[in-house]
Length: 120
Image 1: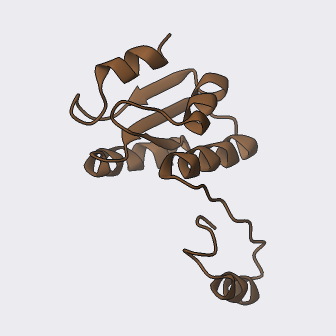
Image 2: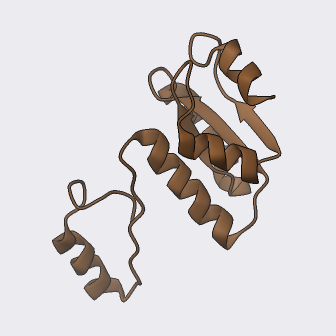
């Protein structure tokens, strides 16, 4: 379940568990980048993936939608960053787990300086 109890109540979580018998685990983060990194770590724990896609939190909704099908079919995570900054969780995930990183969107979404800094 993606989202903390302020987004998805414990009652909803319990109802889903009661109706489906599914084991429930919450994945959440303080900021969107933290959440995307937590999801990426969860994916990586169950299936080693060396590819990741990065989109902008501010300007990347269309970019995220455009890559979501590919990401889903390859089970690769979509991580979010701001135009000029990558949060610690995303940075650590990219450095430790992703050898193929694709930045989705133009320079107005993700700056070249961000990409160049991450490539070093």
